[in-house]
Image 1: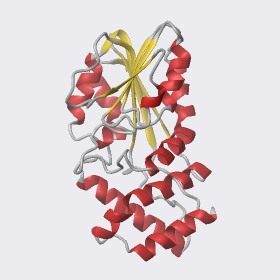
Image 2 (image 1 turned 45 degrees about the vertical axis):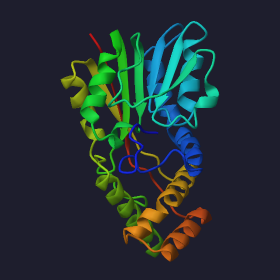
Image 3 (image 1 turned 120 degrees about the vertical axis):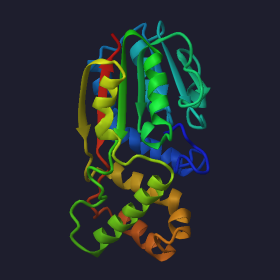
Image 4 (image 1 turned 90 degrees about the vertical axis):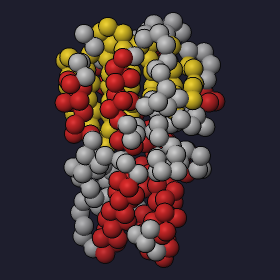
Amino acid sequence: MADDDTDRGYLLDNRQSEAGIRFAALGELFDRVTFRHVDELGIRAGMRCWEVGAGGPSVPLGLAERVGPTGSVIATDIDVSWTRDIAGGVIEVLRHDVAADPPPPGGFDLVHARLVLVHVTDRAEALRRMVRALRPGGRLLLEDADPGLQPLVCPDESGPEQQLANRLRSGFRALMAARGADLAYGRTLPRLLREAGLVDVRADAYFPLTSPACGVLEAATVRQIRHLLVAEGLATDEEIDRYLANVATGRLDLATAPMISAWGRRP
């Protein structure tokens, strides 16, 4: 779910099989939050939406339901492996790099990106391109993580199992930072939207804790990056196997980083 999927860019390669598991878990965790905002922004039949860094299919499909047969949804990503099958009808799927390629033509009533820009090296340029793609009165909804606000996967670090979990999460953050991720990006979104010239800027945050989907997401993420954790000396194979077994028991109270949602309107 990102637009910087290179060997030194996006850490969580969409081409890996675990990516589909991650997208489903992210949808279960965050779709209700995303579509609460989409509905409050008044997205309705006949409107035109751009879903940036779509990753999985759930958000484009939800937008298509709202805009109906007279609207349109363009879903873009550097890797469209998990969205190409939903193309058709009002949904168009395009391979696209939000920080390098021109926005899809035509102007949009809604531009949305979820858990994308934190991974993009040239975040400022990506944001400029999304703002330029808005029609007058169009809305930009950005939702991004802020691991710096809450860096632990087990906020209740009550024993060795939780300590191991948090140590592996620290390794994950180190890998993200080494690839250019901004671990404090989410909190900057309201200011960045105002500086981009948007008005009526608002924001809130959502912090999942103990959802079964947190465990599914965590296990899939660790499986995707285990070779890097080992290669960088951040964990051993034995520690990773032990942690995945701990996650599978369902006894760990796992969390995700807070997701900051910020939105504004082009005058």
